[in-house]
Length: 485
Image 1 (cartoon, rainbow, N blue to C red):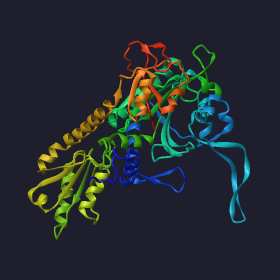
Image 2: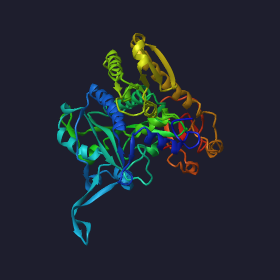
Image 3: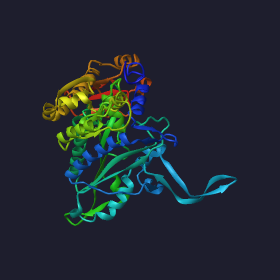
Image 4: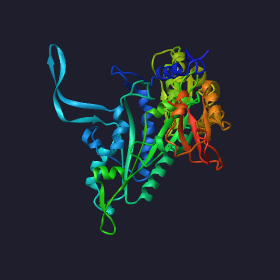
């Protein structure tokens, strides 16, 4: 028996939805295609925000905020960019509503329609053009935490919703070399966050020419593998060259006194990473969380059966006082069945669940369940106090080891021809196929037949010569092929 009604093996999609629901992470909104992030889900996002925000500031970035409405004529200044987002834009065309025959009808059309922010390169660039006058003003390193809107046909909570939350960094540099260095630096930050903080498996690399961010010169990505073998684009970092500088006129006086166009970058990570976290680590009993983003490391459940309430609660407080300040502890005093509480926290992925009753109080012991194994352990309070840090460290190690082992088993390097690739994916096999690819190729429509895309050209290359799996041309380039979310 498991805490969820459906297993990963039986129906991965239904299992995912149940994890989200039973862990109380989010729910569908009355607004079609949008979700409500519930307090427990938002607490996870807040932990992610704090870790990333501290890292960004450590590297010299500062936060700002820019309008969510972008005039359409501003988009028109960068043709490739507007083409890339044209099918996803939500557009405001009127500024008033009036009641007519009992219905609200939009009136007073806007002279210039406003796009609801799908991304902010142009609107932020417009401000940067005013702020940057000289090479002395550079580099300019800005980040904003905000929401964006991209119209979606098929939605799934966290993975793909019409509105989602994210951070987007935007920077301006004097030279191409400095801008490229910033792009790679932030790419490495995302790799660290995804693989080391969130303990997910990911392959870092560059997007192929045909799949770059609209208007970018180069796009870098971390492609994470989910437990079902599909890929999730977890975070991206873009070197934008001078494309956006020329569109919004970001010019500065160079060291030689001449006006020059700046080089810019952008990079972002969204709440979709919570979906990736779920599909990387969770099991048939619910959510599993790495310690750094878990709202609680330990939950203490008092088991009260008689007149011992005061004594037991005091002992629970003693346990909490014993834990280091960095350890997040919650004592659940709600008048609910202790067994129901325990399974609720198992489904929420709390790393350790303590159950404290008369026996533990009288014997100065603690009894706890490890979420990853559902193994129960009893030990003296003093010993527990000494092992808290080690318990958390080992929890994270196991989580990462499990994810790495599951993912590496689904990497296939033996596929050498298009026919072999088609056979692999057509059998409903999922995983990452690493095979040769002509990175200048723009036509990959042959892959559409079995819903596969080139996810990235990994940073780590084998260096061996082979035949492109699509064209048969000689190439040294390895690429990751996979189905994706």
